[in-house]
Image 1 (spheres, rainbow, N blue to C red):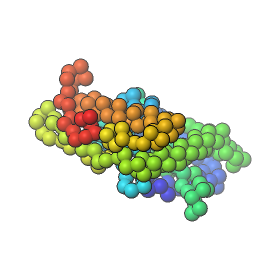
Image 2: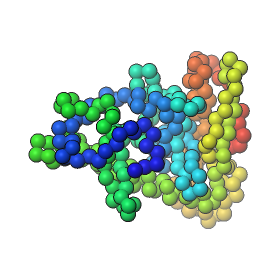
Image 3: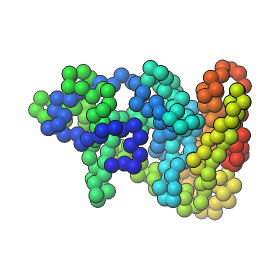
Image 4: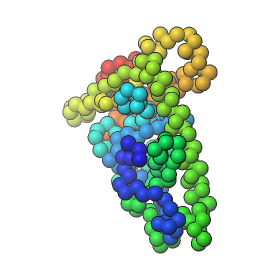
Length: 257
């Protein structure tokens, strides 16, 4: 199974035997992610996510992946309302795929579809989309889920290779942001990585040409631009009027670049 299941509680393999009578009711609610302050992102999502999310990187060594910051504190998701609705512009695919998830086999090439049976929308009352028809064959809905999951997995693999190149070129560094709340209490955001602008500018011309040809250079600029979304995120945690100026974060590079 994946190392970051986050909000998955009881994921089991999907099968016609175990789930022949199972339906899935999805009401566009994301309460399951209410205590998750970041989720993984694939490179294909960068442009859309940057509309209102801050894109950074997380992990160690070669195991680095992009993530979107959803909250400034532990167990805080500022994009999920009390009723479970999403208040942002973009919903990461990592959450849109829930309650499904792929698990890879020992060869790392074969994948099995799992479902979190603890998800509130899973039922045997015929509410929502059925996973299998009366003959035990995959429903059209389940086939669509599989198509989405395969595409997500392909994008995940491409994104992992992209991040490995960033690590090879030593472009990432720890990101630390300090800020002050309206009541005067201090806050600190840490545990993430960001691209160092100076190291990016110092890349050899051949590497820059390669990254430009593969659109990877554009992805890095989108990542850096998305840092500006930390300020409206601060407004959310402060509960201030978006029309009023918020206390700007005081940050070490690259946030202050």
